[in-house]
Length: 320
Image (cartoon, rainbow, N blue to C red; front, side):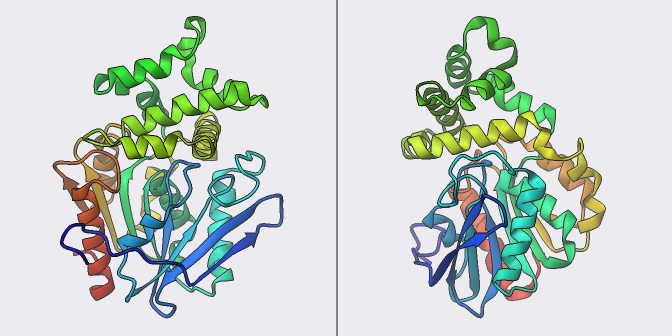
């Protein structure tokens, strides 16, 4: 590992493919690191952001078999931006199908932001398949959290939230989610693409403690902006296709799984109150608050804690 960064050096996959789901979706997956290493599944955020090569670098490639996949409708999965048959239960089923496809009995599941949501939902459905959980930037996807993201966040990012709101005619600003959802689902690129760009750059602008122009540019690219904003709005409008508060309500199903929760103190996208509630409901999990970080997994303090947790798990199978 380099002294300049907590992340491991860049690596390339040794295998990749497309998982046939049995419906219109085909799921991109890749494996890197050591074929006979500890299996770990990286669950990306959004929903709809897709994976990136840097995400392989949280894990020691000499110890881990690193699995990345693009969830339905994003990244290299096809069809891009597709919302049909795109629900949380579908994504959980995809993860199980991928596990079987790769011949993995159990794996460490690693997810941040929406990735923490989906990792929890998967673990609560298939606890016997999880050797451990690494969760970052906790998002339980309750209405209060969605309302904060689209409106309350102006307490910290008034300029960004104002740009998000003022894109919408004043008569529709009483329900920004519905207004954006209508535009993002419109078939006309002249309507959906500007809305996608505004939503995605808003999210990126609020995701780091200090400004990060590279992240804003990456989120603002046409392809990523469309899948991120369209799929997020789709999931938010539908309350992530799960009963209210189901993730907290079913924590008992995963108490025996070794787990660590890493949370930036100044995370404005997924405020610390959700991580605090999860940690209080799940005292067996190790809870790490990073005092000088916002939301992004790549903020130095958060990345350092995530790498350290994965290194410890590789050595001991726990996070104590």
